[in-house]
Image (cartoon, protein in one colour):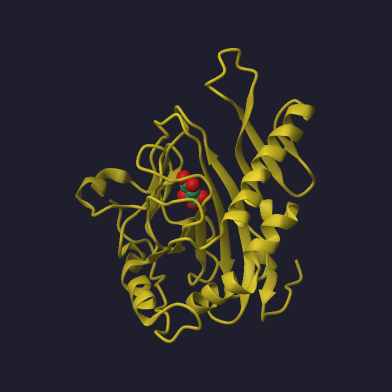
Amino acid sequence: MSKPTSHVSFTEVSLQGKTLTPEQLAFFNDNGYLILPGFLNEQEVEAIASLRDSAVARATEKGGSFFDGTTHYDMEKLKSDPTGKTLGLRKIQGVFQAESTYRDIFSQARVLDVIEDLIGPNIYYHSSKLMCKPGDGGRRKPWHQDFAYWSTMNPKQVTMWVAIDAATLENGCIQVIPGSHKRGLIEHSHLEDFQIDEGGIGQEKIVYAEMKPGDALIFSVLTLHASDPNLSPNSRLGAIIDYDCEPVSAENNQYGSTTPLRGGVAQVQ
Ligand SMILES: O=C(O)CCC(=O)C(=O)O
């Protein structure tokens, strides 16, 4: 595996949180990730799942993937339909901007209290995706750190990844390398995807984040993560949102939004 490319380092969180226990905070400091079982309730999970159905219905009417002015609704033909006509959701990129259901769930106090424990009292929305790995061959995501995509920002940022369908070994749950957030930013290149050199992965300890619907995985923007192809017949829908602690100047904002959710001040774009 490549060596770190910069001196970017992880900022340890205080062990006195509003919501998370000192044990959970210490686990996050040590491992760079944390799983919160049953974090979203059944109604919230169903409300997010229904965004997939409405996106597929709109795309079917429009004849495929579409852009609504702010948000990309990215579709693919389902392999399970031999006629190749049935569309399935691949991704809604920027789902937070377009869908009030998503916005309400991920900016409610119960969620922001947890994020505050990890990144402090100023919380900005950065980016979001409703990500579907369809059954029977949904593709893998190679090993990467999210910070590589937006390395001009503060590395205190965190991602929340909530299972909407069950996430399992067979359908390509997220995998993380515990402690990898302490390595700084590792070199990424455009190979199969934007990713690290995977040569050393065989020697790493890998944790497979198998999760039930509603369980949340939170990880540092420096934590190495990946997911395997979906070899099961079941889809794997995940709700993703990235939270930032500091607005980035327009010139350094390579990617993402600077919408304040708690504390903070709106940044002129
Ligand atoms: O949901 C997945 O399988 C991968 C998502 C991911 O790694 C990312 O968006 O950075």
